[in-house]
Length: 68
Picture 1 (spheres, rainbow, N blue to C red):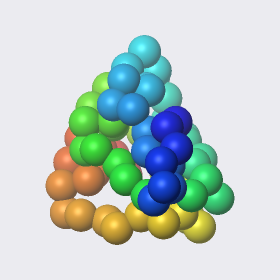
Picture 2: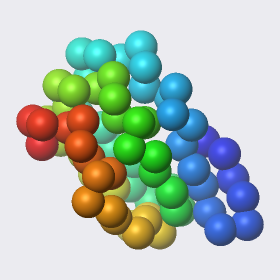
Picture 3: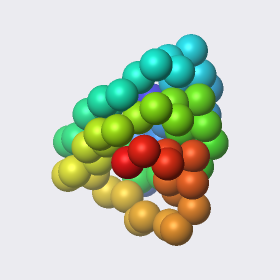
C-alpha cells in the first residue's frame, strides 16, 4: 500500500499472483482509492471486506469480481 495525504492506495499489481484467492479483508486501513484493475487477477474472490476505510465507491470498482 502507498500512503499519501488523503489516505492509502493499493497498487494495481498487489494481487496479480493470487488468482486462487477467495477471501480478502482490507478493513480499517484508511484506504481512500482503489483502481478497478487492482482486482483483475482475483476473479475467484467471493468475500471482500473493505469496511471502515475512506473509500468513495464507484460502479466500475468491482467489475472484475463476478463472484462477489
